Structures are given as C-alpha cells and as structure tokens.
Amino acid sequence: MRIEVVDPSGCGLGPAIGLAQLGHAVSHRGPSHWATAIDDTARCSRELQQRFLQPHPVQGAGPDLVVLIDVFTDYVLALERGTGAVPGVEVRDPLDGAAGTLVYPDRLQWYCERAAAAERLVIVDMSDAMAPREVALEMFPQATLLARECPARGDGRWRPFPFLYNHVMLWLEAMWPASLWRVPGSQRVRTHDWAFCGTVDHARYQGQRRRALASLAQRWPTLRGRIEVDLTFHDVRQVWQQVGFGVDLPGVGELCFRLHECLSLGTPLVRPLPARVALPPSLRAVVVDEPERLRGVDAEQVLAAYEAGFAPRAAAEWLLAAVEADSAVRAGRAEPVR
Image (cartoon, rainbow, N blue to C red; front, side, top):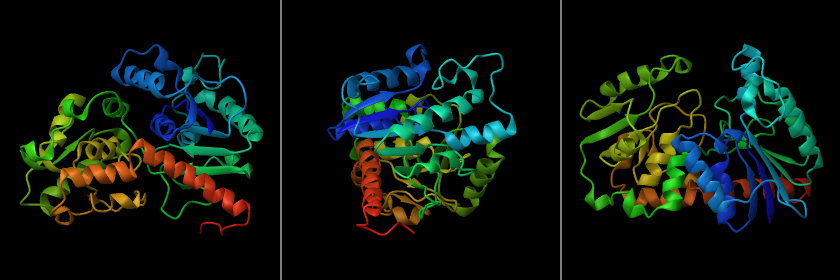
C-alpha cells in the first residue's frame, strides 16, 4: 500500500517507520527544522527518515491512505490562551511552524483541503491535552480519528492511539545492534528498586509530579528510589537498566517518553496514579499500578510485551486495524464502537 504521512509535529515518526516495516511504501513529511537543526533528536530523526521512509510527496499514482498527524488540541489551547505565537513572521508554508501557533489557521485549512481530497484517511491528534478536540476534523465521514490522549472507550468519534516515541531511542533500536546499548537481564546490577528520570518542576505540571514523588516514599517505605532530573540520555539509559522498575508519571498528558525508553530496554514500569489513557492490552503484565504486581517479571518478558504491543510495528498495526474497523462500520459489516 502507498501511504502518505504528513507529520509537521514529528510525533508520527515511530508509526510511520512501523508502517514501512510492515512492507508499505511510506512517504513522510516531518518538521522543517529537522533539515537544519544540529541537536541529537533532529539528527537521529533525519537518519531514520532516510533509512526507512520515502521523500514527500511521492511522484506517480496517488496514495492508498493519507495519514495526517499533528498536535491539533495543543494548537487550539495555545491560541485560546494567546501563547506560543511568534509575531512578525509571515506564514509562507502552512506546514512550517516558524510563526508558532499563528500558523494553525492556515495549517488547518490545508489539512481540510487535503482531507477532502483523500478517499481513505486517518487523522491522529498527538497532543498532550485531551480537550478541546478540533471539531473541523470531524466533518470528514471517511476519516478515522485517533488521539494519543484518549479514554479507552473513545471520545465521540475519536479513538485511542496510545503511542509516543523518543526518537533517539528509535534510532538506537533501528540502527545499532542491541548489544551496544542494552544490557542483558542476566548481567544487570541493581542499584535501586525504582527510578524516575525526567522533568519534575515544570510550570505546566502544576506541582503534580513533585507531589506524586513525595507520596511514593510513604507508599513504598521499604523500596529504594532514585530521582534524576538532569541527566544525559546516555546516563538515563544506564539508570533504567540498574533498577527493578521505572516510575511513569503524567506531565501535561499521561503518556511520556519513559514508557518507550523503559520497555525497549526491558525494564517494567509502575504507573502509580489513576490513569484514563489505557495502554495496549499486551502491556498489562509489565506496566502496572503497584510494584507487587511485577513479581517474577524479567527483562525478556518486558521486551516480548514491547515488541507485541508498543514497538513502531505494533503502533502501525493498531492504526491500520482502526482503519479497517471503521471501513467495516461504514460498509455495514460491523457495529460502531461504543
């Protein structure tokens, strides 16, 4: 199948790679700044594009499936709050974010025009926030609507797409032998029972992570914890492989990079706070709400669950399954998801 992925946020690189790994011809337009930025994430993203994906657009026959991926809800919220604008920058290309949130009206018009021309269409909202949904995208009856931050039973026409990827981790997985970056479970030396690695005191978190981490000492008095807020990614990878489990805390949204990082390294996770976003069913034994439920879980089990339920190929299978389910409903072969 020929698939066109338009992804100016860059959040869809993992699923796009997964679609290519399934054997599809995938064109991918990512953020314009990847071409010039020198940071590790941009460099790794460029190399992954070159390795797995075709340039955008592909010449010749039109695509069999169009996938539009962006942070729609985040844009709507930013415009409502008057944040993220870059004044004085003219919007020349609606998919270029140089004007900040001011690009969104032009970008939304572009999306609507592209959506109207597509016979088979998926729209994926990778926003941190759950609401408000971009209602303009709901006018296309042929569209499958997916959202990263979405309740398990959906939100109107929107259905869950619980996947988020660290691009440097993706680059390691795809470009280098695991023996160079993953320590076998039998050779790991545990220094702590659990760890949290990430930002704690961001203004957008409103103290939620700080309060959650303080409560864990009381909930798990016999467990040794480690909190790291300012490590390089190389050091973070080492920490994840020196603990019994990682702690996954929501930030603005519930899904964070540590889910991908830990699982791809063979480290299970505890999500100690109530969650609305449900993860893929195959992760139930390795991503839990209390440490006691991880007894007997080893690195090999975590890696198997990751490959089955969260690796890029699994995200791609989830996306295509959603398309087929919607097609069956429209054709009268199945009942709508309630």
